[in-house]
Length: 140
Image (cartoon, rainbow, N blue to C red; front, side):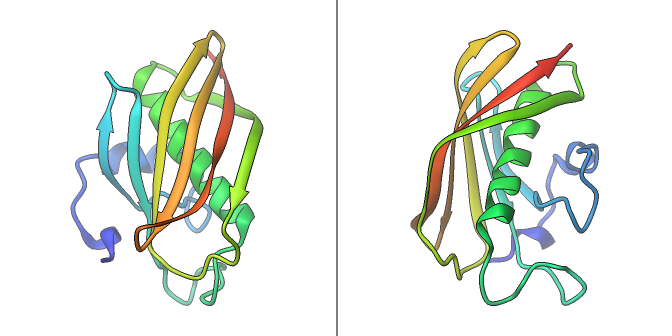
């Protein structure tokens, strides 16, 4: 299922991410729950113009996509556009990641202002392909 062709009520917010195509990896937001501090987003397959290889998704692209989903979550909770990923922790990959689209999940675990700890995961065809945590520093 290619979610990039589906309408999303979050398109203006996706467009407001600092990353612009082809470096923006969030194509579609399935759900955003501010109260629960969670987001489900998708990174769909792109056309041949994209620099992303067709045969597999490199781990650094998956990490960037998860960081963007996490940034989207934090930006949605706060009136800020400045956040910086300051670390990843216990990242595990099922490599090589050869399926698309990727389902990206981020859930807020802890806030110790100005640091946010977020549980992240990516899955494809029902299989977890990456999981771990990241920390974001937020400027207000």
